[in-house]
Image 1 (cartoon, chains in turn cyan, red):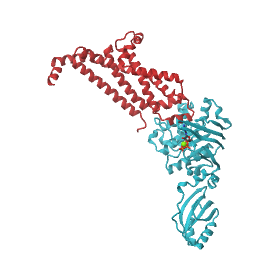
Image 2: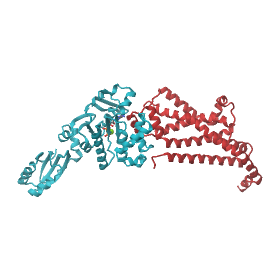
Image 3: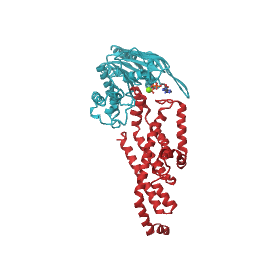
Image 4: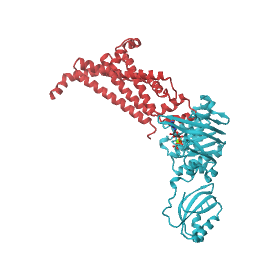
Length: 335
Length: 236
Ligand SMILES: Nc1ncnc2c1ncn2[C@@H]1O[C@H](COP(=O)(O)OP(=O)(O)OP(=O)(O)O)[C@@H](O)[C@H]1O
Ligand SMILES: [Mg+2]
């Protein structure tokens, strides 16, 4: 159990001070995959660096399994850090060591013998699917492979908590997925608690069970991922779920508009609009769509353009409303 | 011009020069190489840890030392670095005598060479270590590395290529100093160039000695650069 209580951190720089964290409190259960999402500058990295005390908070405490990290000596803290390890956006592999030796690194720090360290490192490279790259240097690997080596390294000392700071942000979507799957798999196998820092909704949706939305150094909202993403309350959450830049421009659409809100409809991948066209002969144009599939259910909204005909509008509303989890209303514009 | 060359390469002069080259150069080359390598080695032994301290000892470094100590170190290094080598050599004569027993000869020049070179090595080390990606240091900290472990397992190994190319700069500089020391009693090629060329107007000998010095610098530089490139695993 990780208990973050009333964490505050202010940076003082030449251009004034920045309140990076304001009174942040979070409880993270053992074995959870917990997402911390927020825009750039929201304080995510600062928060995660406070969790292993790479950054000293000005106020508040971080307690892991009942131990207040702030009360530990430097030496004790180093012991704790073997159990709370980290992977990074930039992988941070030692460039002058090969993959095997990179994985050995934390084991060497912990005082393992060379033979023991290499044995364990080989097992770990196997876990992440890179046994054949043991003797390759990081510069010879792709980004995804480098992150796998970094994951193997982070797991070397059998940690209880894995902190991932934007671990997939430098990777393409496919590689991101495979890394996330690996993290999920490791979480299921070992019961390690994972804290995933990201600015990407898709990452949280894919792997996290719980999420906290960080905005301007404060927790704007937290809870179950499905809950938070389907019913965003805070401004920050809404901004993430319906990104502003996607806001539709309907000024030049002739005819009438319907807003279709997907609130957990089972129709995740069903082309409901196409079905409406073939079954009822109603041709609707999709003016705007921002829907997401979370756990096989659709969330989000769509704006449909329809001809200016009362009968068609009524029929469309009737047809769409039949599906559970869909709410339809006529709108004149978009707020 | 042609007269100049005819005079320079007059058969009797060439014969004489060739005699001297055969008799004296092997020892001189050996002395120069030996003094250069030995002095650089001592300079590295003192300068490398000092360079590490210059980086890690900073206020927000991984092993901060009191700022007055840091400032003192910096002042000493800057002072030593700004004294011209020949003057430094004279200034340390008492120390040289105390350590070696004499101020002339090959061994004696090792003392001023080390004193001139270690602050230089410290600065070069400092600049190499500053090139290490700070994220790697943070990574090591996040895995529970102690400051000493960070120095030994991250900072130094990660900057080996840069340290090697800086060591090459150091060794060629020391070579230059050692040649210069010939004017104040040092041995080696510098002494020959000055004794024959400057004091006895035997230009051919001087030219030969200078060419050999150039060849030595080239040699050190080539070997050093190659080692540095080879050691760098980022490039392959
Ligand atoms: N060492 C520091 N010194 C001064 N200001 C800092 C420092 N670290 C972070 N900040 C400031 O604190 C705020 C939060 O930074 P942080 O790195 O935690 O954001 P983030 O959410 O991780 O952003 P990103 O998604 O861009 O990584 C920013 O305004 C940043 O400028
Ligand atoms: Mg960040």
